[in-house]
Length: 476
Ligand SMILES: *[C@@H]1O[C@H](CO)[C@@H](O)[C@H](O)[C@H]1NC(C)=O
Ligand SMILES: *[C@@H]1O[C@H](CO)[C@@H](O)[C@H](O)[C@H]1NC(C)=O
Image (cartoon, rainbow, N blue to C red; front, side):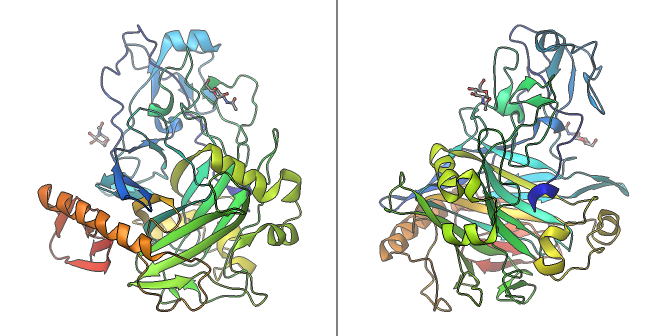
């Protein structure tokens, strides 16, 4: 299914402020900060000094001290960039414009727009971002035997849109090297399980036109009508491009994920994904990927097929995806999760296939044509996804069990200890909210409250701040 994954922006991908070049990047890369939380059962959640960076392809690469572009619509200018060393001498990479890329952040909230609208003009933004640490390298999330929680608002994403949060095993430095000193801070080094062919490959000019494959774990690919989560393990030269995805609609649960459904996609909710090992350690063999939701203070167990499938396991992968075993299945996926993977956020639509693999036919309720990007642009130019309160760490440490209502068959078990530690975290973050309370007002749809949130708490007229859950209030 992910064979439809968006190909990288053709132009972008390139170079580095040469160390002693008169580079215009005496300016900082300007990456918007996005607070995230790392959690343990023993000490709760600790705020991390993280930011997001747009993919290399969104950055302007131009001549040193000049404004001639070093890239073309089909790759690089062969005169300026005949080879890596010359390109490095001639060209620098500039900071990106996050506004025109449709991206904004506030505290722990990230908003990504499909389109950028200004003075009646509309352009396709379709941003893709990576989570960066304060050291300038990507955050290598090690999720084997751990879990990841976040809140998401998919309410404005129609058929054909894909708001995605996933992991790829990119290099922590973005492939920074002597010719590319910019690296991760400028969004270098993207790879995924579709083995994309890009102008730069792991930070190096890709003169050989090779693809760049790496292990990929799709935690959420979704709109308001359909969703899937999918492991894509790789061998050294190829990947399980289809993967054994879990899609409730495809498993017969057609009212599970929809506006007003079991998971009500017209409102924000929390998603928790757990990577369970055979021995419960962070080094064991990955045996199961579990999922649950929290909405309106209610724990919602993952959908269950009539055959009783409610999580991703090795036997189920082998029965539903003929390619899984050849790439080592969950075992390979688990090893990558154990080494560490980069967190990626994107919003995109699909001119070639209208995202039918995600939300049409047996995968969802959408017709084969309503996901056409030109229809989306005219009917839903404001479509956007909001990710917030990203927390990762020990199993049971990243969410508060609201008390079990509605969780008769939850596959996720949580300890009472987790509840206690999360509560103490809240106290800490609440203090932050108070001390840094922002007097600016939030715009329509934006976040205006919630544990761990530090941005504006009042809404621009005529909107009011409405609590959706403990982690999320929104201007509606
Ligand atoms: C981004 O682009 C917009 C529109 O062209 C412009 O108004 C704004 O100043 C730019 N921001 C930066 C940081 O360059
Ligand atoms: C990517 O580049 C980094 C830094 O140059 C290097 O350590 C790593 O091995 C490279 N990875 C691949 C898969 O080529």
